[in-house]
Image 1 (spheres, rainbow, N blue to C red):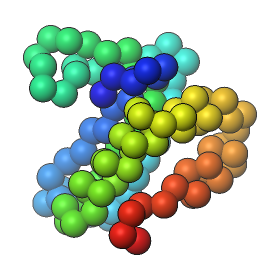
Image 2: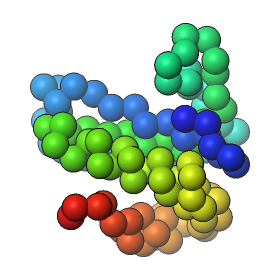
Image 3: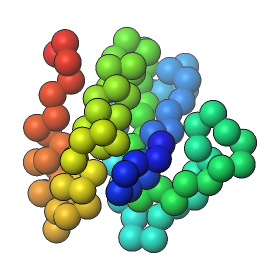
Length: 101
């Protein structure tokens, strides 16, 4: 997904292939090319990647919407890219509230 400062990617898989639910996040210095959702050939230089693995789609839409709200429409991407280590990143992410939870 294109963002105003940093593009983000949210790859996810079919719940049938998930053994244990997880959310993984990574950031890159140079960016990783991802094809923009809804296109076949528009590549984004993605700097933040959230990999989602859920055993059910129950929370997937809420989590995706929250990530869009915070990282694309909000300022969380800029804050996340400024943290200096894993502990700071984890604390920032732990404070994200998913609506309805």
